[in-house]
Length: 320
Image (tube, rainbow, N blue to C red; front, side):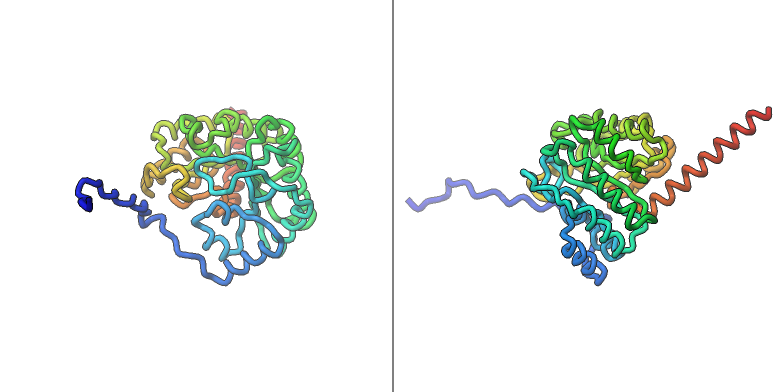
């Protein structure tokens, strides 16, 4: 009765996926990190740095750079890659725009990135709150350049874009995240071509606003699929492409299919520059708002140089 020889032994626990050395980061411990964290708490502001478990939080918060996430900390969608919690969000905080402007002033930000959760429950998708934040920043920190990273405003895209573009952010970012083939499993609540159209609409309304988009690598995409996404972005006149390694937040999320090497990222970056993007950031630790201020300055300089070269070319051609 006690013979257990025929009972199968439990299998080994699955090993935790080890990250390669090139994407390991130190735990944040600096004084600047603590001060930035406390300021966000005091002003009751959420940040995507924390909610999305960004690996660069220690570096960025030490420099007192934080990406504010407006419209609460609860998303109405459940993307397979994202660590932001899903559920029914609470009411929109009327004081949030003023608190964002106060944070920008206290941190001394030259460039600020504002993102949000998806708010499919709101009639305007949350576009009005983006407008209020931009207006408050313009009033209180007029020298701060403003970059927004918005959701796709599903079913409300055109009026949302019209309202936000009229408020004139300096950079309009909306991430495609991955290749079209993987949307049903990775980004099921969104549509690839709808996201492209959103960025086209921004340019149609105001060509002077820089547009930006990003993709994650390591989800099972093929090399030629990434090249096609680049071409699609250039057809939509997107100025800035970011490419970074997908990192699995928890075992419940999509698994990492591949850790893409720094050399492969460099090759993708070179191809993207050859395709005509004004600015490209491609590395394992690249994220949408990582080094955003420095990248914006370089992108603005690149546009000025390109316009000058085009003007010189037209002038030379007219003299022949």
